[in-house]
Structures are given as structure tokens and as C-alpha cells.
Length: 227
Image (tube, rainbow, N blue to C red; front, top):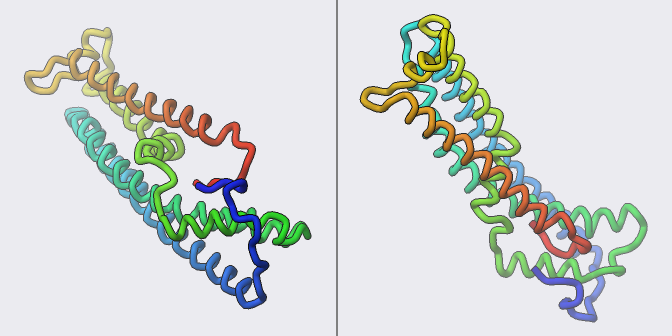
């Protein structure tokens, strides 16, 4: 995005009619961000509902298999992919609305006036002329994992280990616990190792994107950029 130093030196003040247009533009961006926020919630609801179905199926009886809790992991990955894509679009509208709040409405409320730093209009105009995503798919997925999906994954993992430990009866030693994880010809130790890699992958995604967000935004001294 453009920085204040790259903005033109002479920018005309906004007229009363143009101020009204900015107000309507802000309302439009808020509306679009709300719509996409609703779509994010829908995807999260799908994940929660499918997790509930898997839990009900797995714990319906002592003899029920724990396989649904493993298969649900694939669905969670699909839902996360959809949600990360939606979050990238949501972030565009949210960033524009937030940018206008900090550079337009906040300036009016604090009495500083809009003429103090008119370069924000150039940054906003450039985003409209050259629209782009402000966040990568990888970082978007990491944010959704940290804020929502990590809790679903914790429930999934805890329920699976609980199923192995108590059904069909309480496991008396570790080898019995491992044997119960067998899936057809696949030995239990291999299934548990895959589960470990599965969970470590989510942890790595969450921590690595947190580091990327901190590196990008943690030391920001200028509010010129969006996203």
C-alpha cells in the first residue's frame, strides 16, 4: 500500500457532498463485511455440527468405532480451507471500514480535522483502483485455527483418546490402548503416529502464522497500510 510520503503534496479538501458520499461508502463497506462475517460463522457452524454427529456416533455404544472422529478431521480441513478463503474476502471489507474509522471518523471526533493528513484518501483510493487481498491464504487459515478451530480440534483429539481409553472397557495398560487404535490392516501405533502428525500440523500452522502476523503488524509505527 502507499505510504504518506508517496502521497501527492496537494490534496483538495472534501466538500459537504463528498463527505456524505464517504459516509455512504463506509456504510456499504460495513454491510459487505457483515455479510462475509456471516459466511464465516456458517462454515464454523458446519464444523461444529459435523463434530457433534461424529461424537454422537462414536459414543452411541461401547462397540461403536472411533473411526468417525478420525474421518471428521478431513472434513475439518475442508471447512477450514473454505473459511480461510472467505476470511480473505472479509478482511478486504473489514480493512477498508477500519481504515475509514481511524482516518476519517476518529479525526472528526478528536477535533483534529480532515486536512491534517489527507494522504489516507490516496491509500484508500489505490485500494479501490487496484483491489487485492491483504492477507495470504496461509495466514488466513492460521488465524481461523487460532481463534476457532483449535478448540474443535482439542475436543476431537480428547474424545478420540477417551474413546480408546474407556470403550469397550477401561484400558488396563498402554499396549491395549494402542491395539484399540487399529483400523483394519493398519496397526494402532501407525494410526496414533498419524494423529500426532495431524495435531502437530495444526499447532505449527497456528504458531507460524502468529509469528508472521507479529512480524508484519507487531512493530508497525505507521497506520498508512491496510489489512
